[in-house]
Length: 161
Image (cartoon, rainbow, N blue to C red):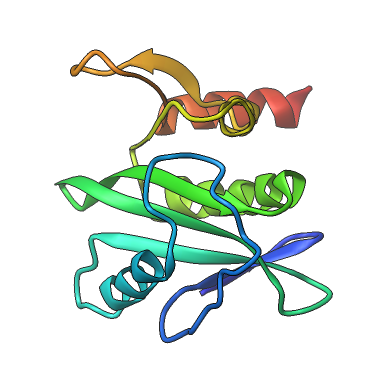
């Protein structure tokens, strides 16, 4: 799968090697090292992966500027609920990549709900920009979520206004 935007494109992490030197973690949701990337790619090659990872790359080259991963935490009637993790060198390009992936996952793959732990100021800002709603989870921790109805409603507001 490849999704194209104005400045970035999204590509599956399947069968790819990646040197993440230079990328930095913008949150503490996961350990972002070569072991995670290898496990993520290994998961993507399974018949039913529990982690879906995508590379955000610049259109004018093949440079990876971000990684966005969805961890499947529940499956109901073929709908996926995921936890979102990402790293990036450039948050504006990451936002464009996240726009593409959210549209794909929510509208095309019927993902009902995506949750993310509260992270650094930059990450929280990205999530709020993408219309995630601040919430408190059952375990008492703060985080963000977006549901398909919220996404569609807010996307309509953007498209109409």
